[in-house]
Image (tube, rainbow, N blue to C red; front, side):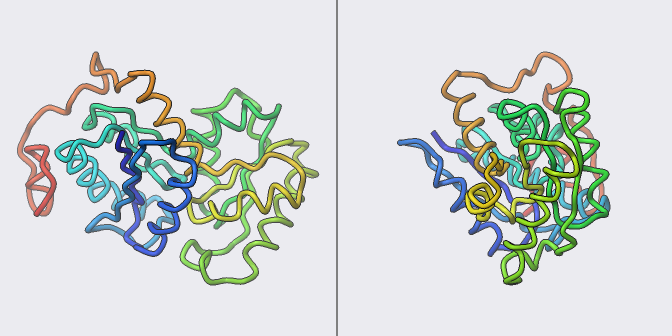
Length: 247
């Protein structure tokens, strides 16, 4: 079984951290391949970033289809390009916000999201409306640490821990969802410090994709997720018209 974990931003060091988290939970015989797109933003912290990350992400899905990947994880909490990736991929595609929020609803009655920048909170709330029962997401809280500083800022762990504890108290929640793939390494430590389940989407999505593949569940091509119709694309997107990644 081969699972391709796609970091939609172009920061290779973050891909390395994401890969380590995914491999830590992968079962025997599961090959985890984490990849960094050839084009896109260094981090995803806006709708603009998210939109421009999608072509590079889709190129990696298409390349994975050619090389025999069985399923995919989209390792950005905004789940960019998720529906488009499902049109292109035969096997299951799971976003980390999707997996984390579903898992959180199985671990408690309500969850709070602890994320990076406040400007991304609206996207998290939108996704909660799609993935979780009404009222399950009790709140979204930002630590105001840019994505690219998560690896280097020594205050990240105590700040995320303090914010998670505050979220539990202020929201009346009983589970914390970490709202960035770059926070994956903090999951166990934060959970131990605050005494409640803390869900990391990278590991949750990896295990969910693994389970779907084991069950023999593939992306349905009956209707909306059928392959996109071929048509001419122009400019930098010319190659995508034939559903092939750019050179």
